[in-house]
Structure formats: structure tokens, C-alpha cells
Image 1 (tube, rainbow, N blue to C red):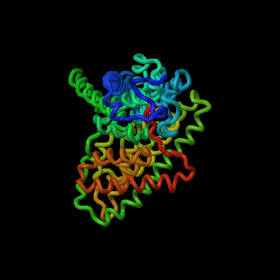
Image 2: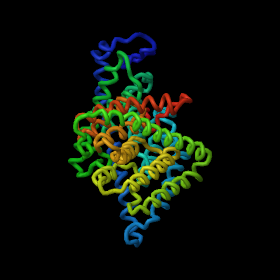
Image 3: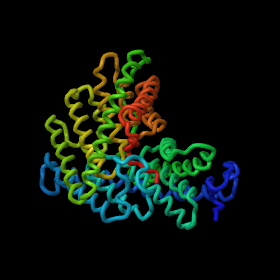
Image 4: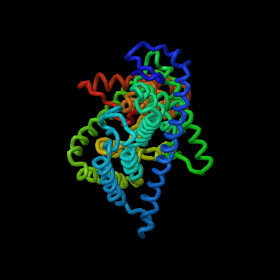
Length: 449
């Protein structure tokens, strides 16, 4: 029997305005606020706990044991433990720890609320112990699962359409904690679920309410507790202004966007190969992959830089790399690009997390290298490569434009034009040149459900 709260358009035509005006829909919006509150609270705890684990494991624990600072080899046993804990979450808990980044966005079955312990454990082990993935996937999965849990508590026989909307509202609320923006959150989630047509307003309003509640919770909990989730906050990069747009800058955009798309596709393809390798025996092989990632980080210390630049999502290292770009040798940036790219590919195939932050970091590093090209100022170079990397991984062009434009806005208004061109070129390059098998190459592991 069809529910009055959320009519199913697959059964009968739906008038969106009639749905929005109905009393049942108002109740549905109030429920979206409850979902937003629950999802944002849990997401806030997750995002606060993750950097706390990083601090304790990588900085405090070596001192407690008796070392004078963390030894160079310290990431090796830590990432081996990360592999073991993640493997236990995958094999022993429902939901297999969430979606696999290398399989693409929306891969696997929807996140159920019974899957949340496994998603949270795998996410904390992956992010807290140093793998090269970001928080987006587990945070969105947390929001989706809690959205379903709240709706199930109110109405056990809710139709599929209502489940989808409440899952999206929870995802928007949780994801707003990452980018600290209800607008970015709503755009990414709605584009990810492929929402279009006359029902957009019906779904958009609950998502905006959820995202808005998430932003309020972010600000309120930060004020009350003195804690924050700014470990993953992204602010406009302090880039050298690019000035007026030139023909040379536009000419560089196409080859650089294609090159960045090719690099991202190689990372994703490598992640899929790793996934095939580790899937049959995760308890044995995930610790091995963790050790391999740690070895890459240790290898990078031979450049004189810290291993932490290769580890983690790159959110913390982003600003120091940009600020010190003028003094960092091009060879060091090149090694960072290669080693972190390989570490990201390994993490993508074996562990659980999102790919947006690593794409932003490596896109920025690639842009700082491209800054050496003639006629290409720093702001323009980073705008081109960063946006191409993000869209090649997210496979969401509008969301990629919004994210990249916000990050490079400090380079000047003309950077937005380069972002748009680069996003279009990179998106088409992945679909028409590199991924000819017709396989969806999205690899952010940020499923909406």
C-alpha cells in the first residue's frame, strides 16, 4: 500500500507542488531535521576522534614508549595494525566496512544502520592510522545509515522513495561537517544520486534542512566543547594571483587537464588491481598493503622531508606545501607526487575512505610543478591541475567546479574560467580516451547510501 508521506512516482504521477504543500511533507521535513541532528552529531564525533587518534599514535605514543620523537620506521608497524583492524571490520562486521574506493561512487549495496559499526571502525583505522584516504566516504555512509535508522523507527514500511530521501538528508548533514558548507554538501550529494526532473524540489528541501542542521551543529559543538573538525577543513589556498586570463594559459589548460586525468585514471586502475589481489584474503594481505604504504612514506624521508607528507589524506599538509612551494625543489615535489600517488592507489584498493582530499592534495602538488611552465602563473597552474584531478576521481563535474573554484578563488576571478575548462576536458578525457571499457571510473568511495 502506498505511503501518504512520500508518494512513489514509479507507481503514479506525482505533482511536486502538491507534495510540498501537504501536511505529511511538513512532517517529513521535521523528520529530516531530526535526521540531520543525529547524523551531524555522530559525524562530528567521528571527525573529532580521527585527528585525536593520529596525534596519539604518531606523536605521543613514541614518547611514551621512550623514543626521542617518532623513529623513521614508526609508520610501518602502525599501518600494519591499520590493515589488521580494517580487515577485521571487513570480515567480521556487517557491511564489509563500507564501500571500496576503487569500485567507484555508489558501489555496493546501500548502507544499512546495522553496517555502521563496521563503517566507523574501518574508517577510524584507515584515517586515524595514516592511510591515504579522506573522511568523505565513512561520513556520508554514517549519515545515510542514520537517516534510514530514524525513518525505520518512525515508519517500518516506508517506501523506497522515502528511504532514498531520508538517506540523502542524513548524508547531506554529515557531509556538511567535512566541507563546513551546507551548499557544497547539498550539491555533491544531489549530483551523486543523479537527481533530476520535477522531483528535485521534493528531495532538495530535506537535503538542505539536513545540511543546514549539520552546519549549525558544527558551529555549536565547536563553541561548547572548544574542539573542532578543522583537521579536514579546506580554505582558499594562498596562491599567487594569476592576473588577467591569457591565450597561453588557456592553451596550457587542455594538455595539463588531459595529463592530470591520465594520472588519476592510473591511480584508480591500480586501486582496482589491488582490490582483486587483496579481496580473497584480507586478513593476511591488508597488513601487507599497509606496510607497503608505510615503506613509501619512509622512502620519501630520503628527500629530507617528513614521511607524513605521503601519509594521510593530505588535508594537513596542503597549506604547508603551498606556502613553501618557492623553497621546495621540483624534484622533491615530483617524488611526493609519485610516492603519494602510489600510496593512494594501494589505499584505494584495500582500505575504506574517500578520494576527494588526496585528489585535492595531489592536484595541488601537480599544479605547483606545472607552475614552472612558461606563461603559466602559480594560480592558473594549480587551478587547472587541481580541478582536473578532482573531477577525474569524483566524476561529478558540477561538484568538482564548486570545490575547485572555492579552493583557488584567491588566485583571482579568472581562475574560475580555467577551472570550468579543465573540468570539462578532464571529464571527457576519462570517458572517451582512457576508460574505453565503459566502466565507471569514479573512485571517491563516497556512496550516498
